[in-house]
Length: 447
Image (cartoon, rainbow, N blue to C red):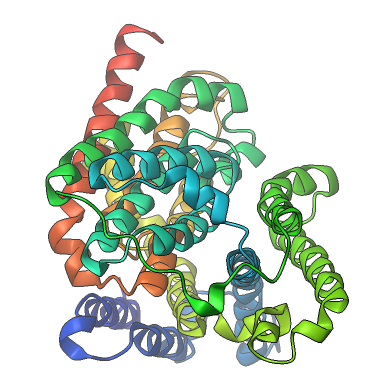
């Protein structure tokens, strides 16, 4: 490792430490992430020839700009998807679309609600992506749980259940989508062999979190600004159907058109926007005051831009690590250190996915390990299924280890330190239990 590479890694580690200690430093994580992004790439520019091959006469600045634009394009698809999904859910929520979901989940028993939230999140994340599912469930939780300390526990379980539910579905997580699109796993294979381990990785943490929730819930009072008298019950159901149904339609749209998911999410937002505008046009005489605040054009201001900028900074900083070869070198070292034990390799990758984004980790593994005709590296082989499970579930161990965690962190203001102290060991217990379950199944059932 060269001095420049080491310096970039040190900057990333120090920045990551500042994010982890946000409650101590009092510096917003988005500011630190953006600084990491700029600092890493600025250091990269000191000697880009170490990492890229320039054509004769090619300007280094232009070459690096092209590389950054490539990474920025991939990052922007995630950011636009996130912004679109957050806006859709906010529109549905503000116009009463989640009321019947809230009513179906409503109970005063804290532990009953724990299991209802866990199961519903698990199911939804298999169809929606885990980021969108987390947004939906946090908005529902706000209507069900008044006490912030209780809501943080439920929100943490949402992260765990969303990541677990997305793991066994070929469309439930970005990493499984990647593996599926590359024909490394099949839909039938991943569902059959990863469903039970995924359930275990959700159930074990739920059991461990039960003791933190005792007694009955105090139901939050309805907010004036969230009154649902504006639209009829039918109109609210139409808004819910377009919003949530549209989110479910996004992977279908992708499979039909082969366009990126963010295009589908923007289509759903456009349809929902036009629909609500037509509803408001008929009732315009009633909305000269606060009611007009619920229109999409006004709700766009409610998007948490600090979360968006944090996502931008951390993903672009990780892209720099990928470009200088640190991630692939780490994967190679893991393979050598484990002597080719795929359980150890993918298990370590799962832990790493809670620290850095699992997308470049999985992408690095796909590039490092070629597909074999048969065996553990073949289609639906041991390695690829383990990679899908570990990269998906492992992200729950730290709150910034997955898109679901980042979203919940922004919406519910769950600090890195609180999650590390109270939830990390719980998530790890579920992760290890699911991994053990998979080993038992592969050893005694799917031989």
